Amino acid sequence: MKHAFVIGDQVQHSRSPVIHQHWIKKYKLANCSYEAIVVTRDDIEDFESRLRSGEFVGGNVTIPHKETALALADERSSTAQAIGAANTLIVSETNQKVSAHNTDAYGFAANLDSGAPQWRNGKTALVLGAGGAARAIVYAVLEAGYERVALANRTLSRTDWFVENFGAKVVPIAWDAVENELPSADLMVNTTSLGMEGNPPLDICLKNAKETLIVTDIVYVPLQTDLMQRATANGLTTVDGLGMLLHQAVPGFEMWFGVRPEVTPELRALVLADLGATA
Ligand code: ATR
Image 1 (cartoon, rainbow, N blue to C red):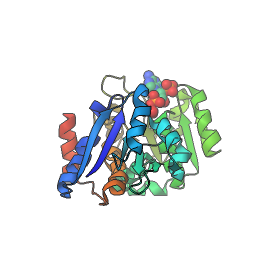
Image 2 (cartoon, helix red, strand yellow):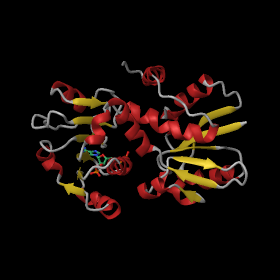
Image 3 (cartoon, rainbow, N blue to C red):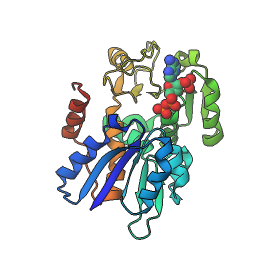
Image 4 (cartoon, rainbow, N blue to C red):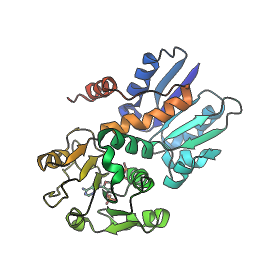
């Protein structure tokens, strides 16, 4: 049997089991399984012992273990190392060595490749938020060849990490200066929790945006956040955040189970139904 997991302290809300269990069924992998396991900070050492005992082929890691997962691994991908966090672990079947990967940057880029492939021609990005998700996204945007990433965060000091780690293409800007960036931005990304169900909306006027601006949001509950609705009303191209969640799951599944799965409309509908939303 090949067992995989998603661990985290709030993992009962994770949609990853829906995604991976769908693929296990679709590709008829009768000897494979994927389950959510609640692991708190206090439990992580015990979980590491289970990992090293060979119980699993690997799994996903979410809050609050993404940095710990990177630290405990025997090997780290260059992407995970650069982002400073891992969301995917692989356990070698021969020697139980643990390798740490980060597929969030891939998921972000693959979602845009699918929804607005012209994003790769852009040069200037505007990223809102400087938390963990922003690290993978700024990494992906720079990898795609962007020359300037204006990074706005309510707490400006959190942008320091980005300049130190990713260099001078990252330009910190004040939270209230965001609208000034819109005439030159090719891509705008919300990585904050604003707009998520139960949170206030992201209140930004898009009227000065370039008409070719692509707007994407990592929030996917609701799928059409206030930002996405406003972008659509302004005639801008939008890509919703659900695709990033679906695409980031692809490399992990392939590494654990040996089949590269596909992100299909059927999978998207399944996850949307699970979220209780409508397409
Ligand atoms: P994640 O790791 O998922 O990105 P996080 O590290 O908690 O989560 O980051 C959440 C992001 O949303 C941060 O950029 C946060 O801004 P601060 O660094 O100033 O906290 C942003 N955010 C959350 N609530 C916000 C609000 N009311 N106004 C502006 N930004 C907010």
